[in-house]
Length: 171
Ligand code: AR6
View 1: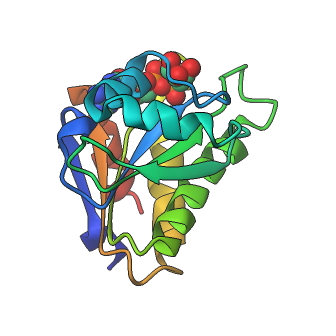
View 2: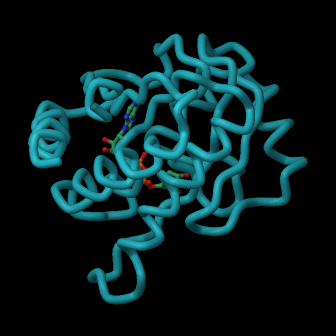
């Protein structure tokens, strides 16, 4: 069953020893607050130097770098949509973030990948709807990617953990 390949944890994604952690970045890929700031701080200056060479990233797409001082081997930078009420393509763009991140992880032979709750901080996406999209999109995409063994949803709050658990139970 796909959900046997899911783990939900509460904590700081920068501490996870996985093949790739996903960063909720912005289109510049030049760092920021929230999880993006935490990842750049923990990875060290090499990460920003590599990000500068990437030329940014459109919303819904993903780009990969090394993990530098992180325990994770890679960082996959994806750009979630800013929530503007839900009527301008936000759900499809958020789903693209999860799908494209996993496709890129598989291309780089990552078998363990951890995601934060993309767009649910500064970008304002409602957490419950975002958790459903995250879980459903990862489940669907993992069906095509047998070499990805484990996906961790790394939630910052207890509520976010609960929302992801409920969404997994509803699959
Ligand atoms: N580990 C795991 N999750 C975290 C961590 C962490 N260390 N820190 C925060 N979160 P946000 P967004 C959670 O705002 O909404 C940045 O400035 C947080 O509680 O980091 O996609 C970028 O540069 C929330 O649930 O990302 C962009 O400009 C989730 O991570 C913008 O914010 C996402 O919150 C992106 O906004």
